[in-house]
Length: 501
Image 1 (cartoon, rainbow, N blue to C red):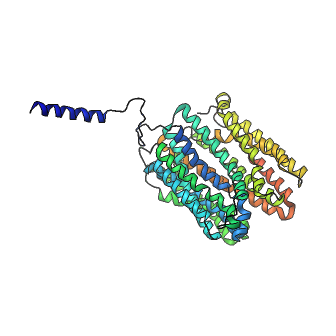
Image 2: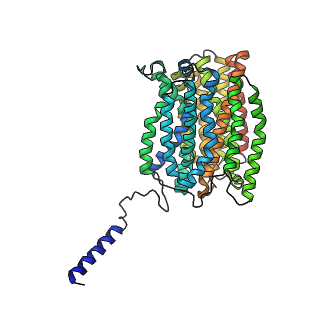
Image 3: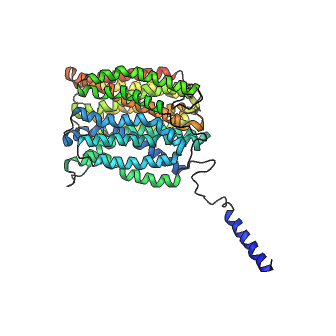
């Protein structure tokens, strides 16, 4: 070989080596499938945005229901379906969404869910009639179920130690704030939307859905840039029998409870409620048998044997039932009882949101010092807020205004902010990273089903009491039932592990 050929060959090898050489320490390298993925600040913001959207949209329609009824002539039964259709499809598919993320990649499913959420929100905002809106809401709930489980799974799989504790605290704060902010945002949008020539009087309620479209577009861009790809090292196949039986269990419980009162409690509602315990028991047996045979069930019983997850869920359920019921009932009471407009009804909960946010910021520091007793203190404070609110309603109705509501809702929000972020952190503290998708799906399913159950049970109780007892007394009774759920949560908090991981 000639000398020039040798030099050429040497230069080529050097060039290939330089191209293959890793970047310098200060040079960022964009990689979405790194062996040890790390969730940065922008990525955390993006997945928290994805966590906020589904929860905001569960509550954002509460203050928009009267205008939807007026615009589309929906009637009580269809209005219930606008709320329940979203909640049902969301709750039924959450665990499946977590499993799909474990298999196909959580970033990929997050992107798919975010895109679908934007498109289905557009369909909701453009719906020409009530039935189209119900169908679009069901599809929107299914999109949310693809997106939300990936948030917790990504946090679990790409953070550790102090960063994970901080991320989980921020997730809990985001979840609580989203539920309150959804109602506030809905009221403001309904009142402030311009009377466009295209939509006319319906512009207000349509805006509560259309606002999601640009937010989802921004979320897609950020997720493509900043969210790392993670998946389970040993992904399991879809548990078809378990998925179908879980869906049947949730539908037979939630559908009749949400639709029964508006539909006049027809025969199908009682048949469905009678089927629920059999469907739930069949689901348990199928999952237990799959676990015993070495398969991977949709909800592994071994996961439920984790003490932190089991005891944490025992508190998340009554907390969410009371919270979901309260948010629905207060929206109806303020608009129909006190004749407040949608903006005033939504903004009346602003003190709750501010207090919740303040408590969420203080929570991590308090947890390091007092452990899970922060949850017990939060329950006591929330109970005090509910008592203050009930007394205020009793003494000042119907002259009750926003200043009168402020003390009760602010104290209740402070207590909730000390509870929910810590509870969500406890539930997932011992879940292995490879089962993060399943663990996140189980927790969000329990939370979402409980929120829907709260709307169904406390909402039905409130609306059933109004004709005979009046709006004031119906609201007081409902608040006292919520107080019982708060008391149960507080007592159960004494059984939580003292140290929070």
